[in-house]
Image 1 (cartoon, chains in turn blue, yellow):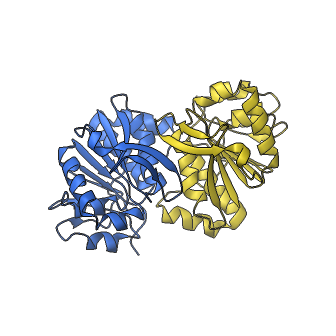
Image 2: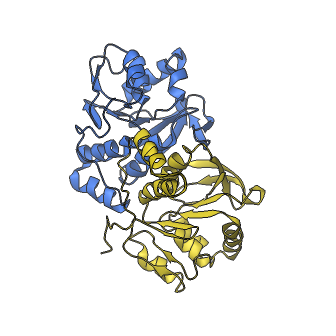
Image 3: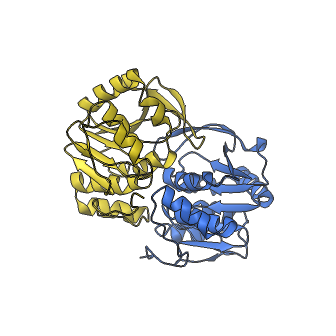
Length: 195
Length: 195
């Protein structure tokens, strides 16, 4: 199954590369890196990454969307949101990390669904849509095919949760052990409370 | 202070991008991405990243070296090891994650020093040098200017330890909180025992 990593300028680096490390280790997955127009995308931490144009993707797989400061611009970019809506509707699963859920929300993908986001940015995220049931206290939230995580490092815990849901707890535990990661495995736990 | 990220083909993605996320958040740091010959480097997870030639770097800062399958080839690459020795000697601090410590060891940088590495690869790593005091049980090890971490995700805990040592515990705790990371803060703790 394709894992389509959707990048944009000023995405937060660990948001995506924590889940990348975990999702890659499921043999059934093939990771590919995309952006709206293809070409080089630069993370908030200055990492310059080659991507293909999302129009060339097979969208039927798993869509993974990071957060980061770049979401503030994209939340008002109608073209980006229209494309995101299309690829999100076609995907078997949609995973967002941190403020990536604000983009899913603005695209209308989360209407009527539960979701979470970065604890420090939760006020802005909640302002992007009143059609989403925003959960302030959760490491990650699952609603149908949508997985949304709390801030940055929470994406790793969600990715392991996704592996558990799709491939079983033993698979998730093996991956955590192989990358020597202490998995915060309770999705409903509140590790970093909203102040 | 420059943070010089030294990449190579088949490096392990999270090895470097966990520490990148953390080291970036210290305002005193400027992150730059290098490789032996410059150009695009591809991680073990297929991420294609633009790098500059290490010969163009100001080496006086912090050198950060990931591990990954690519280390198996580089451990026998005399040209790479000679360059690594030079830049390691010039650096104020040298940080390695996972099997990156095998390359520091083969370059002779760890002679007479204590170090650790990935728990699943520890036998191979120990075979790369008998002049290093290899510690099988540690989340990360500090010996002078050298910081070496255990496997993959342990690099994040080490990076926070480095921040604590250089800038204080409050700085490290703030970064962990900002990225919603549950810091495994005890460097001597054995989270994943060697089997």
